[in-house]
Length: 599
Image (cartoon, rainbow, N blue to C red; front, side, top):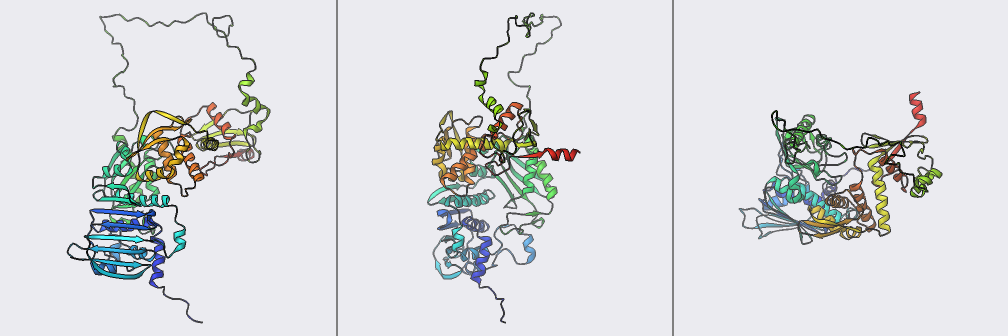
């Protein structure tokens, strides 16, 4: 029997490595822009065509490469950052893996023009699918100019599973934002199909954040700064009123690298407890500086999940820093008695002026139980049943409450009292036991079905705003707006696009108690998260965003009457079990389980 184990050709090995490093066009943008930053560039320009499917071009004015370096850069494991194993634990740069360029060249057609400052001529290099095509001298500017064309041209299965252009462009924007937010001293620009999406001059950190996420953020940012023996933490967090149900801008960076960290995210949520409504998120831009030896960036191929050696201690430092920032800027509501317009309190003068006792007029002969007094009890109107047909019909036929699980369980009409638990759950009696209902999800289901019925019946109208509102949008929001503009107008939104965002002149009628700007922002955040862009799916996503924005938040105290309306409304819905975002709305604690537990 012959041997069966063989060494893979470099081209195949590079394609396998590309599967980890290059997942979509945004991955190419990330790797090339990070390399440009490491090269000491002061200006970096990115251009994509068809969201990067057709062309990705990254031009920088960094140090450039020699002829030999340009060729070696496309070999696997070639790097300028590492000489020995210990160097892995002292890295302060981005592109060190030595797999990005060969991985890109394995699944695309790459052209590189590069020149160092001391060289008269630069180098032009062409590679296609890991196959070297040509190399020759060329006149070019100092720095590097990478052009990547026809991504995944030789891996059709990968190309087939790319999302829509709008989705992929959104991913490119996200990758670009993560880099520019940590390098405010570099000038960046980004173009899509010839249209400029971002133009970011070199500036300070706060202004860079405002330039990326929108001018409105400037008034919502609170500075954070703390330095200990373990780490330095700095950046900005949002004021409590800047919280949103969806789409809040949240960024962690460590040593200049973007990261995701659920544990530290929980630390920030803890700092905002009882300050923002449950279920809402505050924006934050938090930067950590720690010793490279105290973190491990290689636990995930994309290096976005990072392990800290002293996570618990840093968690406590972060929480204290956020609470200090919020408290120091007096963002916790207080009662201020020393204000203009305070009530005048009479001053006692021992030898001057007179003070009279206030008098109240009342009718001493009034008796509410005496029909002969001047105020009589209002008579009950005749045929009162016609005023409340729902109540009468429900007494005749409880099934009008709606069906649940094939009508196995019906709300117990004999018990009209409901109990609210921790501002989140409604408990009510049913025939088989005790039902626990998530109030936010129940209201979300009610509003979603109501709004979808209006869409299907074309009943949406526009409610004009007395004063138009200017809404600043991030580049990601602008892309989402361009994708769903027609659907938004069909829903009743009336707006005019501007360079900075939109001027909102009207919103869908019938949506009360929601700030128009918040409603628009929530809907755009929902649209930006949509993978597919079919018209029906877009409309459903927009309606979900509107319903989420208008639904009862966690923590809102409800009266018994309000809870009753909510329960009744839920059981008139077509689906009473699952919220439109896929979460369970209620469960039943069976009577027999209660009796079994209590004995």
